[in-house]
Length: 73
Image 1 (cartoon, rainbow, N blue to C red):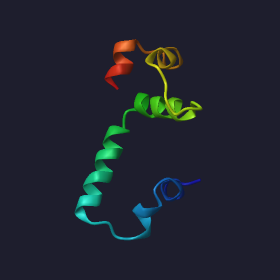
Image 2 (image 1 turned 60 degrees about the horizontal axis):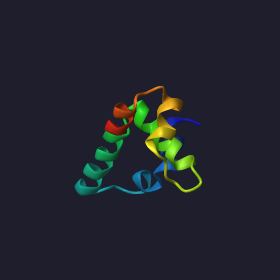
Image 3 (image 1 turned 90 degrees about the vertical axis):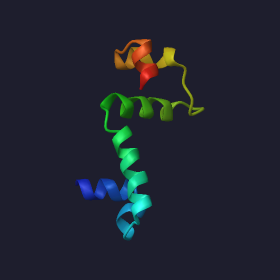
């Protein structure tokens, strides 16, 4: 799957029409926040939980990060 196909699957409204300045700023902010690999891993770990929630104690070991670092992200 190429990058354009990945974006289409993830964010269909981004490629389906011209977005206005406010939408572009909001989307850029989201991508900036998720631009850190550890944050993407944290998001995926939390999303994979049956309840969609996780305690920091469940997140430190899989990422090999300390609790303060996980809390920072």
